[in-house]
Length: 334
Image (cartoon, rainbow, N blue to C red; front, side):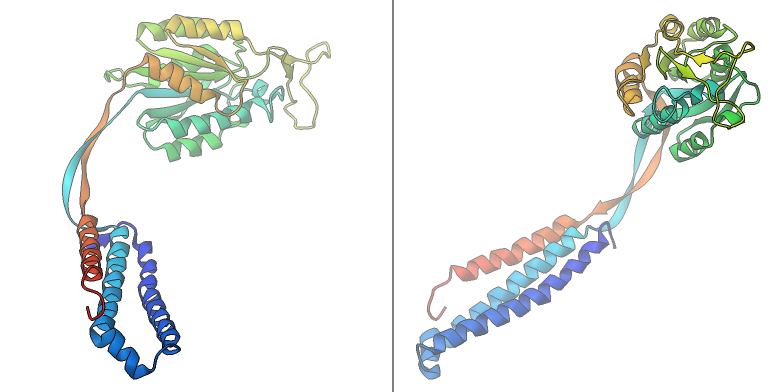
């Protein structure tokens, strides 16, 4: 036998405590009665049978309490195997880690906000396989499709602009890398979740999206940043900002029109981060879940223990029933 909630056994201490309380209460009542009659007369009035009935009732109540505590501990013995099927879709999360993602037009900055959003997103995609692609001027698969969300989160937390081997922003390379990360033989619905500020330096994003659409892959785009934009922090970490060849500040602005077109040609949707750390939840439930169909990703058998707590509840009810029967017996001498 094993217990699903063994910590509940600590409440078994209530049984002796309640027994002690019954004894103290009984003695207190006996002393109170002695004020009105002598011990010999009191014995003739109450009788031994009546006193024995009280002891028996207390014992039944304590037994019922003990059985109820054991039932709450979740006793289990015996087991059987149950087949389980896990269904979902394949989602490649594609995150922009270019230096423009360090712009602080949203707090604390675009990249950190995106990582927080993805962390919240991972918590709600139970059942879906998810992977991670990072990109700047080039793209690379950081984590392949997996059901291990802990590993996915670990790879996500390690991402930063310093990991990008090539500067710039190439949306085409990002989408192509995500497409190649899917299993072409799988019939599972495939989704790319593109998170970027939309600056496509190579202007290849729309064409890559069209190629993804031909393969039945939908691209859902999450725009991060403000259309008004902000200056890009300098690479030297000196606290300054990137400047152009003529000394002017380089301002990075969210390119919503281009991102909307990428989403549209694949049958996906576009959402901009405006409400806080739950924006990607909206993309998932109102976008991905509505436009895809979950397929079987994993099946197997799990060992399920047989719950036996009803037997203990029945035992507790039996003792309560006995207590009730004794209470309805004749008064006086029992």
